[in-house]
Length: 107
Image 1 (tube, one colour):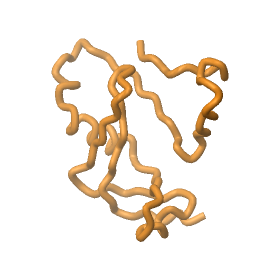
Image 2 (cartoon, rainbow, N blue to C red):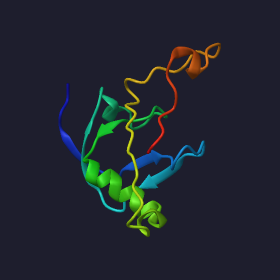
Image 3 (cartoon, rainbow, N blue to C red):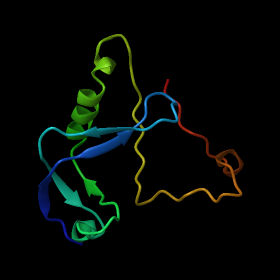
Image 4 (spheres, helix red, strand yellow):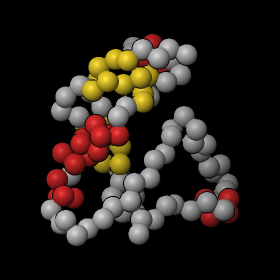
């Protein structure tokens, strides 16, 4: 497996609370990232590219994209991570509830 570190701009897909709407955050500076499963070679295709990046850089991109999250120091957030390389899509005939998995909820 290629573990070469590359400097890239991040794109982080996230939601706030249990909103069905996704928000795309982009980093303002390049950060070190290790591309997974040979995705670095897919630059000329439309296939998604996945990389391992520092959590701090991902959170900075989210906070820069949604600065309103930082205004209330009394408010806490929960962070849930989904690894898109391990996630299995739910078959169309099965709902997540019937599989015993629900969407995560923060406290």
